[in-house]
Length: 123
Picture: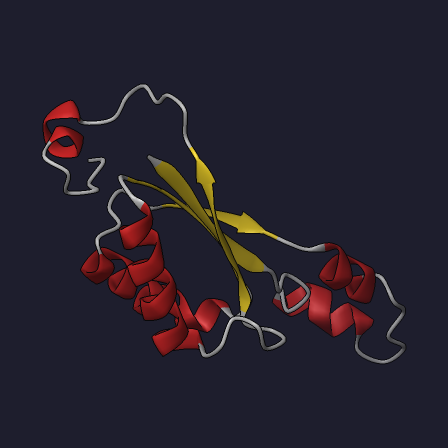
């Protein structure tokens, strides 16, 4: 088993990325709001005329989405990566995001009937 983790830079792509992940075999994707260091530092730079307006209208809340999914094998990870790049473009280019897989030694709470069948689904 592996855990896929992606920090999606442009959240306008979220629904298309999720659809691509599901089509590629990922299931049970968890999504968290997140913000990187660079965006936090940019947010705190003083903007003379518009600082009040950005806070008033919520435009200073620009961040990322972090996606998590448990999958059965590396073939699904490769399929998810390729499908993600079809949506956002080359992940090696700036402002696309990052995607990586980590080995999972043991997991609790997964739907055992689905993972045992080798579908990569977790619920």
